[in-house]
Length: 349
Image: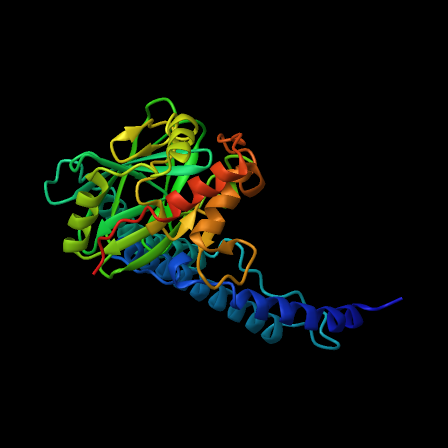
């Protein structure tokens, strides 16, 4: 039978490998430990303060414990009873005051941050207002001041305050952009939660749903794309511009009758499911199939391949999503995938 030391020796390499693997799991755009905006920076600083206080407490407590164990250990032949300190008023005052001081050090900046981060920018004319609506399993972004609506990619101007009003169309989800801001629940029934954030640097930041919401909860990703102000204005204009339908009459008929009953393209179609305008410009299809001409993983492929894979069987990509399989001929599937793969918004220079 193995003793404890043998068990520790056998587990140590496994634990070391696990620690090494976990250190490679971080991403700049998906980590609260690499803040990319002022809101995430403030939350990160608060987290560092709390962890620092906890480390100090642990070090002091362990140091005192080891000192007492060594200094006052029973020595050979010593039969005396140690001096009892029960009821020592001086010690009781000390270990009552110290936690109060630590709580004040942590509590004051925490309260300040709570008020700073809960500011309401919905009436601020300089802020970009976005109404976020979560669905199983996609994200809808509406810009009421600009009269546009899109899905899966939240395009924002860098440096501007983004005022979020979040709600849900079905179950409770949680809107979370780890590197830019903390999470906020999206609730059904008309309840609206508010938050704000900004991205000082251009770039793409990954967002997640942080609330267990169904079988494809883990696949409910979205992107936040921060661009310069001119590109953002061009993006809004491009999103409003009319969109040509497929040139092939048969493909056009299939697209209008089987796709636009739920989806919108330009000023045509229905609003029930993601707006497809400029879908070929997005980084992914369905929020999870990454668009790339150099695929390396099973969830990567060209825009055309990803669209064809999604349209042919969306439940194989995101189980439980509301789209379901659409009856299309091979020619219709190819034609619609090709048409959508060329539907780009030219707004970045």
